[in-house]
Image (cartoon, rainbow, N blue to C red; front, side, top):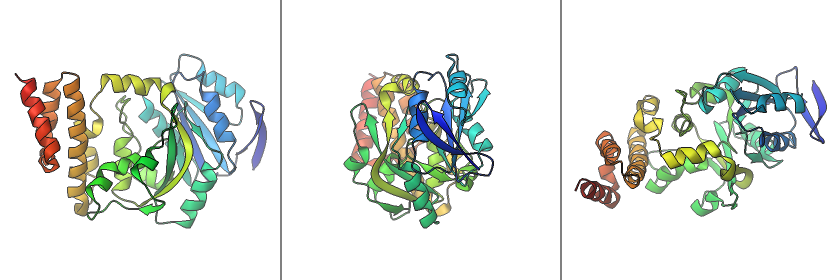
Length: 315
């Protein structure tokens, strides 16, 4: 059954009762000022057979109460603050759709995103996920255009070029990724442990290691970096991501034929992180990354530059 409500002056149709085709999960933490914009973009979708689950992760600004009052067609569930990964996993456990997607409470969709994703995933049953280009706001930067991603299914394989391996995760973003629910559940959901930076990377890697994904080059979402306060703070502090502190969370899911590819990706990611740690004068953390990921030696000149920077830092 479908019910039509008014969402902040807009007509919005959301499926209730019978299982929907898509479950849209919105983790919310202290974004009362912004979440309305996000929900309006969801409720403006041209595809209408979906449910919306907002997981209020212990907000102290009344965000959950605002959503419950202003958007009666949205399911709101509250929990003690446990981090974005735990909030997304709570929504995933509650979801009923054939497909699931996660949209942060400060980002937005183009009206055609769900329609495009569902049509594509129904047409390409071999693909575990759909993802599309997105604009990095407020400057409107399109990384996909810079990286030259083409439309169609893409598979991480031993034959992939180094550039394809290094850039593969740039195709993913919470803003535009839509997953088969079975694939998201099998991937184990998001990293928790109260992690607020990089909690999505192990989830995406486990999917890429097991499934083709469909890449769509049209910009179908906006990632509002300027409003992502938590993300900006995390980047300033530059914590080391869980995929680097506990790489077994992806190594254990890696097929044998892709182990070399994964180790190369981990080495590149660790090398980037080590340079960041050196810029913050944390040579000990940088040296530990070099020790933990010996495949960095395969990076050639970049590895040599890192070792030189480490040597200079020790003087």
